[in-house]
Image (cartoon, rainbow, N blue to C red; front, top):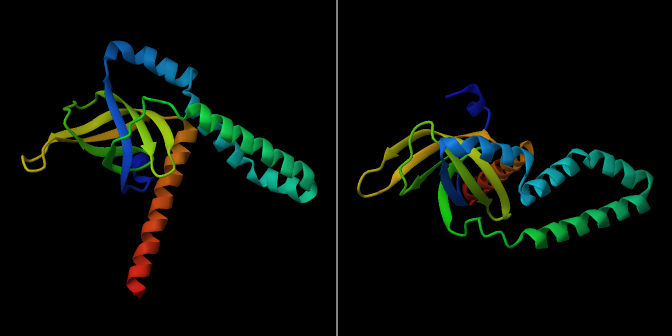
Length: 191
């Protein structure tokens, strides 16, 4: 296990998930497209990531010039509405929910498809309940057949190619789920 993987917390979660093994002859072209021609929702993720980096600036503007701050907030809301409506009909994203173990560096799940160590898999993730969409290229670390009662294969993947904004979304998603879980556990302890 690499030091990088140990930096991120892992949680049990339910996500929308599609996975597809990428043939070696296609990989270079697919990765070039991934890095140069971002998906529309990746652009939205990048946009939101940059906005979050400038929250302090926006707060400063709101304090010094409230009219400008309100105007910038309206522009941001309009962009959010446009991108949300524009991106809502993406049929590549899964609607079927899958149980996973996930972090900002990797994922593990059970499927009926056998893959092999070092295969590269394209993942389409739909994080719930926020409906955030992420495309990741991941490397197969392990795939083993489950017992007959459970069926299928348990596959573990390490995220090899992920946009920084998408990794931040995963970090926040995992962190939010952890906080919710800890809050629920504390509530149960008190009752």
